[in-house]
Image (tube, rainbow, N blue to C red; front, side, top):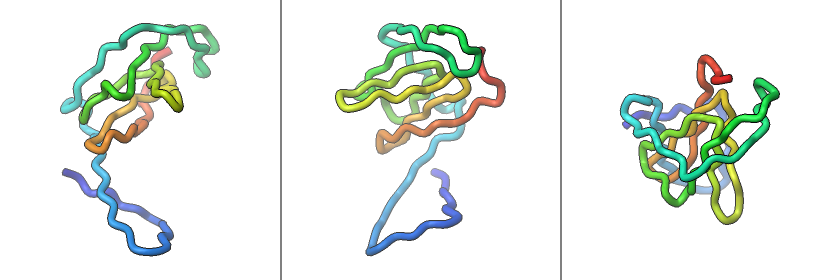
Length: 103
C-alpha cells in the first residue's frame, strides 16, 4: 500500500477518501483485448489497431497498454499510444504516461 500526497485541495464538509494507486507495472497483469478497432493515433497521425476492453471485466491490478478503448454503457475511455491505464482496487482508471510512446 502506498500513500498519495495531495499538494492542494479544498473540501467542503467531512470526507474520508482512500486512494490506492498501482505504479509497479511488474505487479500488474496485462489484459488481452476482446477485439480490435481502428483509431487515428494522435502521436503518429496514422491509423492504428486499438484493443477493446469491457470495463466491467477489468480487475484490481490490471494494466492496459495504449492504444486501447475501455468501453462501458455510458462512456468510452481512450488510452492513447503514449499511456498505460492501470486499474486500482476501487475500479478507478489511472493513466500513466509511458516514457517512450509506442508509435
